[in-house]
Length: 171
Image (cartoon, rainbow, N blue to C red; front, side, top):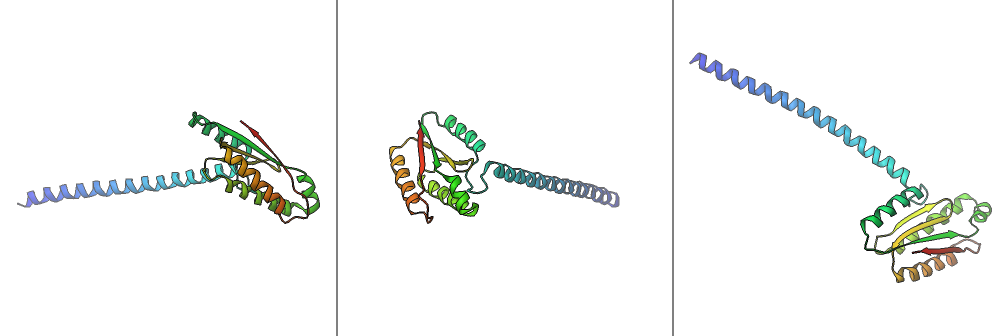
């Protein structure tokens, strides 16, 4: 009876040790997984910073090109237009009213542009200085809407300067 008890006790101890070792190994794996996830999050944040215009939170030019290409490839049956909006005499606004005022103008314009996309299928970017790119599925009502909203924005923006923009559509 004593020998049988010792064998069972030894077997239980052995299984308990295996369980503890497995638990330690799992804890190490979980710790390493957390480290990897933290690195991935940090990499994603870095990518987002590189893809985003720091002033307007729109895409930068390179991110616009890659996302536009990806969007067009993923939706080959959809016709897209690229709209380019260029603020006229922006350099003069920057020089006369200062960089902060010019930056606020760009931020406000970016918000207006984002508000135009009721389908949430558009891709928006600010490229050097005062030029904005939009990739949008072809829709006639969008062109009328952008013309109306941009005209209203330029006319009512609180700046003692006649704001103008050139808008070009490339099918």
